[in-house]
Length: 210
Image (cartoon, rainbow, N blue to C red; front, top):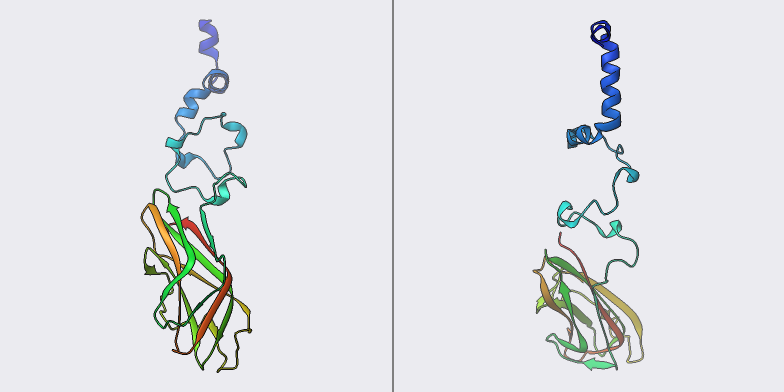
């Protein structure tokens, strides 16, 4: 044995050590690997044990919707609809009956993307008709007040039977976690203008903060 050790070459010793590591030293070698040693794509699915990655190992807010299979994330969408036609002649914004919905922003905060569409008729003067969407009483972006024509009288050529389909979309700033209420308001810019809405739908989608 002593003769073997004395006569053993450096190559033989190195090869023997490599074999020992390969057979029984895997855990030791793996323990020495750092993030800087791992190249993109070097770790495969087969290298990760089942149930090895837990919630505490995943950075909060790092996963995206695309990281989950279809149907795995619950949809956080609020919906409301007009049950019957409504007409307003008010020049001050007022709630459109029935178009109010509450949605919940998850921990970490988020934003709301709201869409309103309806059958519309705007008539009675050379004016136009306004719609705005609010969250918790604050107009959503872009904030335009009455400087947005959801529908128009087309210079007083439209009538009560000039039904058209119209839509608008707005988004909120970052909101704190919890329940938030989205509403739709309507108004006219001319005192003799009538604004008729029917078959309307309000949808409010909660998205990630950004």
